[in-house]
Image (cartoon, rainbow, N blue to C red; front, side, top):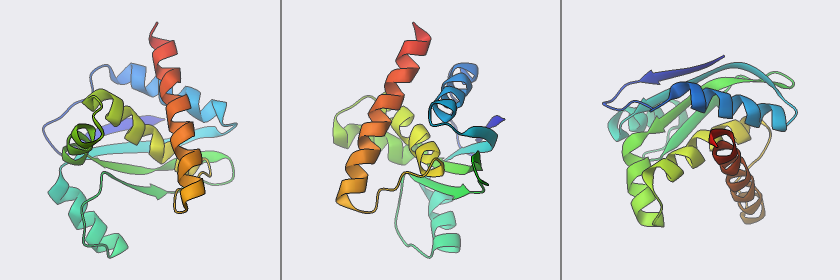
Length: 140
């Protein structure tokens, strides 16, 4: 089950379409959907989580807590809408495109993809692009 929660003034347009897309991505990676909670928040909210749980004193666009067991994907994914907006501007992409990238980034981590090395980051970016295309296909 995929849940969307809001801790800031923001709301996904068409939550069911996002849920279907995320479910299809999970299946495409040969995983099983467990309970996935998205929490959309602002920089301040996510910064506090970053300090409290990861001991990192910086801003980030996403923090995910992975509760997956075997192939069952579960976890909490916190997304700073402010960071996504700034990153979209910095990367010269639309807010919607960057939001999709971040939304699926957390799922890909749960599916086993890493991004700490340059090589892993390239694989992750390729997977993000592939999965974003699945959203567009579903919407046609």
